[in-house]
Image (spheres, rainbow, N blue to C red):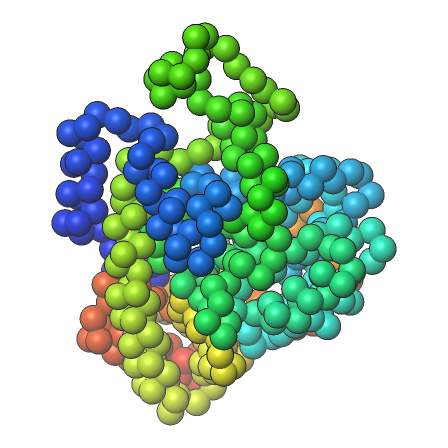
Length: 382
Ligand SMILES: Cc1ncc(COP(=O)(O)O)c(C=O)c1O
């Protein structure tokens, strides 16, 4: 089976984990602090602005919760988002309002966001589809002018930049996911970035029971009653730990290599598919935009996509479509009007296998299977 994604866990990650075993310190500790600090360096921000979490979803929930939203408030997000974003909005008490996207990039342009913004809009969640930075500079400018909080869902874009500036630092808050399918993997894990230092300190508390400080051994050295707690407001327990942080620190060092190999695979797909009629390859990011290349998505005539995906699966090649439109999901109240770009994209888009473990031969196998499947689907109308 040629898989869609595949984590890249190797000897360095194993060595880092075995050091944790030797120390027998598994919980939140020095390795978490080191990973947070390295990730903050990667973003070019201070370490106090980032918190390592047990998932990207926890980052979305904390971000929304920190805004103190009320019934009647609205949060705008692209319809092709991961469902955790809509869940986080819905469970915060606000209403998700899904906006349209460009049908080729699946990213919203500022105009799509503007069309969904109302006087009740408190926040916008911007996803960078497939790792390609979206229209983030203009969207960030608009949110600043209107006093709307901008949250970047940077789960797909851990290495993406616009004019050298890392994606995730354009908004007020951002989160990344390090789950098993992502480009940088810790098993499960996530990171949140919070621009405002006071909110960052609050979110750090909210991620760990609402406590102002650890009540552990470190505090015992400086306090007469180290077991006493200070809880200004209740919180959750969604922090990461030293075992996963140790893996994350290694993966972060390896990240440029992962992205470079992804870029080579994308170039190979692009050149192999350039002559395949009826298949559109992902639009090249505009000048100044650097992608993480998380997805390689093609677009086929509607009616062909599902049959092609099935044929590829029968050939041992796993493909999928991300992210199925959320404005169709009844649990989110069908919020949002006509979204023609999303409708068209969700009938035509297919994500092909993309991970650094693919050989050039694997890519050619995918392409020849795709060539066969597209030819067969085009010859036999559904
Ligand atoms: C765009 C996006 N946002 C958020 C998440 C949630 O991250 P996690 O799986 O770490 O909770 C995912 C996970 O697939 C995602 O793809």
